[in-house]
Image (cartoon, rainbow, N blue to C red):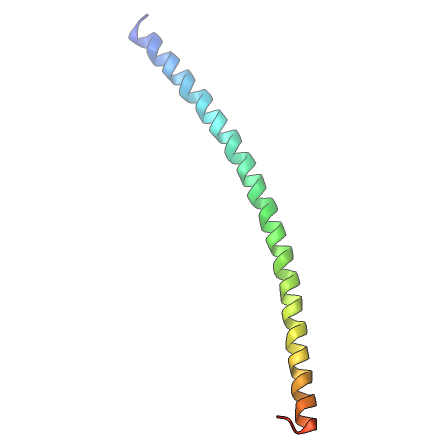
Length: 70
């Protein structure tokens, strides 16, 4: 076995490792994309609840003012 043979074997090993890592990162990217979508949906829902709570606080302020509690 020559140095050139060892170089070729090493190059092939690193090439297959690079492909493996690339495939793994593609899978991770897809999972992060799915997580981003889920977080976007959660953020949308939380924003909706936040607006509803603000509306309730405003209405309670009006009720308290009318009842003379404020």
